[in-house]
Length: 157
Image (tube, rainbow, N blue to C red; front, side, top):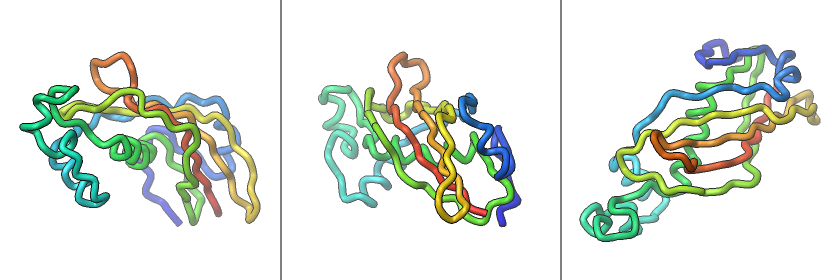
């Protein structure tokens, strides 16, 4: 059973149902580094120059390297742990995503954070809860967000 919770919002399993409509707030900013981008490129075998070649990227459409869209999307997981902790559960499952949009590239050196709202909670087979969260990953100082997605999580006792 998970006991160490450091999230901004911590609820018990039984209180998850009361989260519908709740604004979970913002995470702290995290800086996207070239090292993060290169590591992601190695893990996914996506070494497109726009991500991994700073010299070539200077003359590209963004003037610098940019994070892979899926790298930015993957940040939902560490961001999520900052926003919501659920006590009294044995298993927490990343169930997937709905309606993902990459609305703005993230340049190397940018700071990003996430805000989330709990849109729905439903009971699921096996005594679990299925939580739907509307998530927006923002870039510091930039009006248009980097990613807009619906995150799906499940919790089981």
